[in-house]
Length: 193
Image 1 (tube, rainbow, N blue to C red):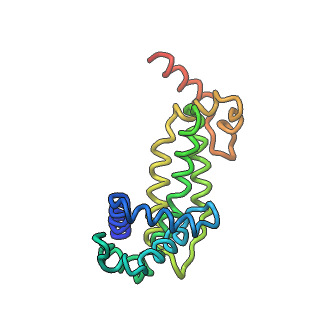
Image 2 (cartoon, helix red, strand yellow; image 1 turned 135 degrees about the vertical axis):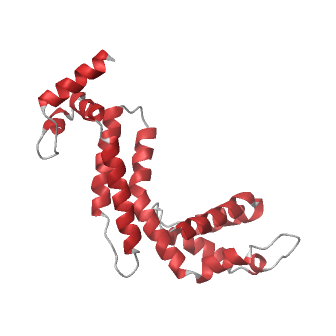
Image 3 (cartoon, rainbow, N blue to C red; image 1 turned 90 degrees about the vertical axis):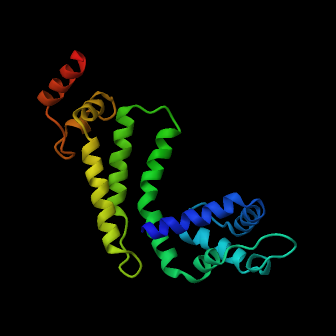
């Protein structure tokens, strides 16, 4: 997956730094944009059409061509696109959670609710045995779960309890909630600081 990220970085850096090719990609993407979802296909089709152009493959009219390694990645590396699709699927719930929290004034309970929603989305992402890398899949979920539980501190549980819409959720057994005694102790510790 690190190689996929390195190739993505190279693609993005080239098209962002080239005024001409970045503009051409924007035009190509606007012509091909048929829905608002961000997928590997929504990226690969405009890039592929652009890399097939003769002026992209060799220098013309004083404009530099697209580098050969980028053209090879875009046109010939199907494994790159498959892995990029998996990376997008795994990262999308996290990116959506960040976007939701940045778009409004969020408090600690809102952040925890977004993390819970993100965890739920991560569990429901379908695994395609024909396309997806199983080791990456397991690793991504393991890292997310570890980070989720390390961020789920007593203060976060207290914030959920104090939020009027999530009070019952914070203490419910279905959500592995905390006891009232635990929440009271946490509140006292916060008050004494």
